[in-house]
Image (cartoon, rainbow, N blue to C red; front, side):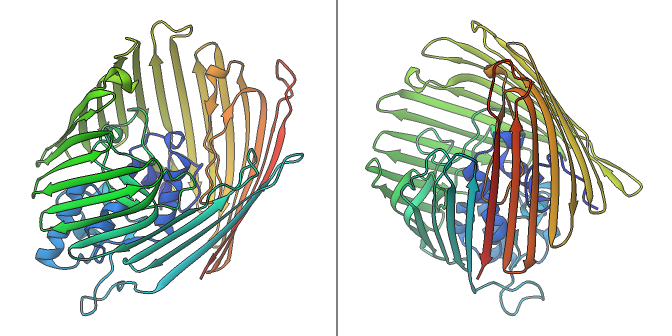
Length: 529
């Protein structure tokens, strides 16, 4: 039986929650963005074929590092298709824990004539998702998203929406990609993401803003990728070509009139890349050794000057990892330069970050410690967890903020029970608590959650990831004195049809000043063609 994972707030299969945190490097769901969660939910619905996808397709998913992609392609060339997940775990750059997370978003397709297994999928897959939300005395919001994939060759995205705060629809997101196999890696037309190096020159889309987990110390550049994100910032044409160990990526975005060029050279244990835009240029390098992984990037921007970062991971034994990151940003960058370090074990992790602003001299110290053991008793699986996060900014009115989070989950057959308690000391004392009960069946699932909170100062607000339908992301800030309750229900009456319903209410009967509560209803329908 899979153990109940730390967070009971994400929708999807039981393994999706932990797999998402493992692959993104986030320490908790509240650190993620709506666009990134949607991207992984789309990958879960349309997994990538690790045996059939080319280099550009593998990189564009964001699931693998450039070293892992090069290692996987080299292994496929030398030995043929990978026949099992256990075999994949033996490939350089992969391990059992990472492969277990990867299984939520990928599959091992087999060409004709190979051993029995899942064959390469060459059919056209299409998905249409419709959703709406309603609050009394407010405008109704709606959203629509279309996704299509032709095996590992073609991907198409189209989406549009309104919000409760902005009932007028904006410009829709339109994106299409074709993936080649040889010299031509891919061509993307429409909205796209561009992520190169460590993000000093070019990085669009999601990125972790802090260093609360070891995985956040290093960014894994993915090059160009199509996107169905509602907030895509690049619109134009992008393409890349592969000449043996060399890769050339070029793009032009009409928004901002932004040209992007990247040239990358890949060796068996190292990669080096040069990235340039109209505003800046950088040189990035990575080296992968048996126990060490080294990475760094140096950049110069015409307006903000020089910036650089360098880091390392060290794996002394299986399941244990150390990491360090040293960074410097110019005065115009307005980010914290400094040093971050961390340690990670199977059920324990800790990070420490010390930095300062080169423009103002302001200092910041942050640390996150997590302990999340899992154990079973008879047929019941337990997953307790503790998370202690501290931040110090000398010179501010309330320089110290400390948050203690305790989570407990239990799973027995289809039944789940969970709860979470947050205690914050910042401008004052604040706390938040909720309990949740659920039942999951093959075709339907229901979750009922209720909570209380007391947060008198906005600077002490507590963010809580709320369970919602795939493609919908909600992290409300608990502020004031009151209670909340929500009902989440998912139903799949047939293979092609899926329905999600969410009801939520928040009330403030004990608030220090009168404050209106709210009620919200969300409905989402998905049809697979």
